[in-house]
Length: 102
Length: 218
Image 1 (spheres, rainbow over the protein chains, first blue to last red):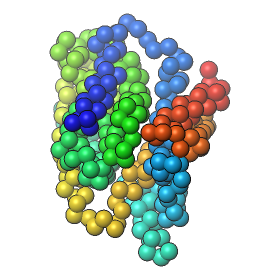
Image 2 (cartoon, rainbow over the protein chains, first blue to last red; image 1 turned 45 degrees about the vertical axis):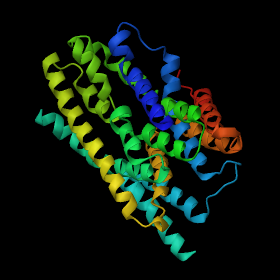
Image 3 (cartoon, chains in turn cyan, purple; image 1 turned 180 degrees about the vertical axis):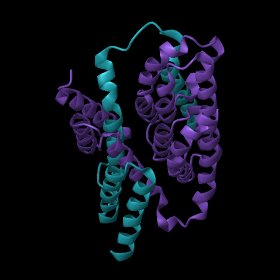
């Protein structure tokens, strides 16, 4: 139940972000400083999240060589191809290969 | 209408692995398939959905999980502001309904149509929105079905961080964003032992601050 409530809260918040200027604040503009900060939200949060997924509660790294190599491969593929399909194929391919070999 | 679907199609195709990974992450999180799936129609945003499900499953404090997911979606404020003038020419019902579907991909294609005649804009927007909504809800469900079929030893759940790193890399189009990403990751690690995984939020915040600080384009 808690999980569902969390989903509803995030859903309402997301709708609020998407609708507020269209429904309520049509005449207003976002201050340039805020727009600038919003640009960095994606890279900062998502990369912090990747790290959070690789450490346990105590802060120790739980990822080994296959994981780190897979992330490097996925990142490289994403950078070169700009395509999520290739990113996942490269990352998971390296991950599985190294797990078999190591 | 045809044009809207044709424009949406390549974006839909490239989002297929994303939807499947979200479905898969739900099956691995242990929060329950149906509850996890409801976030597809309720939140309708891949990265936030994936984040919320993964964090809730990992035993993160609920408040931290909610906050992180909301922070990820804060970028939608920009889309709302950018399209507000266009929506002023629309009927009231559409001003309320339209924003629900203002996902990244929608913004990318409808922003190019913002000066279209209001009726044409509305038809275009709704057609693309329906195409995206059907695709997303169905393919997240397909991911739910695929997840349990794959043996656990494959560790398919690792596709989650791989996907995130791809999104980060693709979003970096100038140097300050790279700084934000690197500082976000490094400080998230440095504060990783904070309770309830709150180090994630500290890292994210410091990453944003670092990006702003080195940004010379003022």
